[in-house]
Image (cartoon, rainbow, N blue to C red; front, side, top):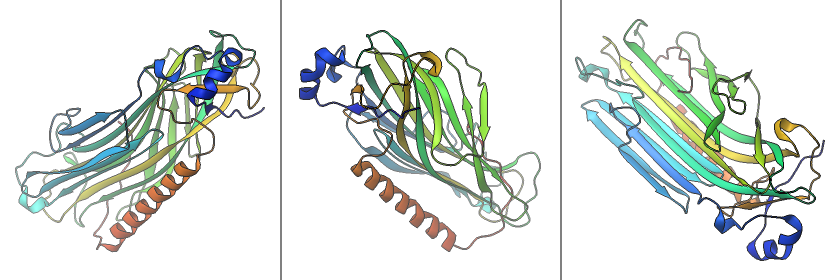
Length: 338
């Protein structure tokens, strides 16, 4: 089965090849692309960011901190461009100063979200506009989760430390894929990520029918159905959440931290029927006209590879900095996407 490379065609090339490729419209006629970031540090109502921005050009992002009460600090960092993004969320509590103060209700206590949305028209030689098609894709990720609990804390109702991150993929406005980390720990050890859980939502369904656990990069996505020559809208959401609720414990400085970098790994296969039926389309006969002007390809472009390497280096340095600080005892935490 041949892999398909779907490449953006500059406008002048699209004009020359338009009659043959049946593009059905230029990139400028597609729904405008979108970049958005949101940061919600603090015990505010979930889904109401204290800071956000939305633009067409990127990358965009920000770093927002908030001290809601004495001894309770939230921090969110986000950066997003078309095809890549990073999010980070940290909650730190000086438990001794917070007796009687409400924390993290409703959850999440702190959250960072990065969203990129793009629209493409896919055409192929010999396939008429309106013909049903389908494609698979992939995403690359690098993430880190920690949840630090002071020695002597006990686990019971009202005590919770959690860090989680996740990726969601929407196609034409419908949730089609969700990827979340899985981590395990024993008492007094870090919660270590052992794999990822992927939930796939079939066309027209709100209930996931496929769940796969413990796979490595790249993470498979799809299949996604579309119609040749018609707009296909894709939205990718990256999120990191952290929650600290001390219960009646009033010692130490507990904290939760989640960080995620994800990049779009491109389209892998294209078929000339829905549900990956029919026949695979040969490499080189597929052309995409993309609203953002970016190239949805299987392998990263050179500048994307450099950006990904830079982001990975930044996260390695971040992890090293966190490992260098003194650690106290760590309670087991299970991470899950919300």
